[in-house]
Image (cartoon, rainbow, N blue to C red):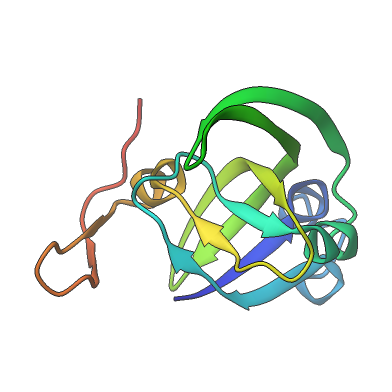
Length: 126
C-alpha cells in the first residue's frame, strides 16, 4: 500500500500557512498493512530522514512476545485522500514499513478479509 509519512510539526506549520507542502519533510513508501499491529512502524533511516525525535523505549507486546520497542514522535500518515496521526515505532534499518490498526481506524479503513483490500468507511472519532 502506498503511504506518505509527514513530519507532524512541519505538517502543522503547513496548515498554519508557515510552510509550503513541498517543504514539509515526508517519505513516500510502500507499506505493509498489519492488522495485528497497533501502531505504524518505520525503519530507522526513514525516521532519521523525517527528523523525528525518539520518545525512548517502552515495554510492549510484539509479534515475538513481550519486549521493548522504541517510539518516535508523531507523524501524519496519508493513504489516498485520508490522514491520521500516530506515534511511530522505530524498526531496524532496511525493514518494511508497517501501518497498524490505530491509523487505519482513524482514517476509516477496514480490511476486507476475503480480498485483503482496504475498504473505506467512516473514520473512528472517539
